[in-house]
Length: 196
Image (cartoon, rainbow, N blue to C red):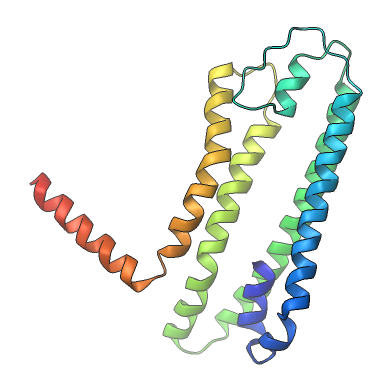
């Protein structure tokens, strides 16, 4: 999405040529390949650890930080390696997004009309909101100390980062639709009038 926004704003006359079907397929394949590689690395490392602290995971789904709590052996090196690989992948994506948006912002600030700047920023804001929401909640979930938090907090954080971004994604992107905005205004007015 960041590259799409970059191309649409910084190179609008080349958009059709740059964002063709082949480019979209390559970007999707790159995202899927990096996800598969990262998960294969995590799965391989988890299979090498021996577990002896029971088989109950205090989580809705089997997550790596929760599995480290059940490990018998010292898993410091494995945990550090997984964190370094995951953070490296995350930072490379984050760096690409930041570079794209710095170029977008410098281009938008050069637009002479206020309406043009507003329109350009409004196309970028939903993507930045969704990415920030997912990145912040995921970072908090995975980089907090394992043994210092309660299992209740772990459950709340897991729900927060696994449910909230996918739920908010269509809401944030649909708020650019004029009909939905008008419906939301009517609903808000009706709700406020019934409350009074």
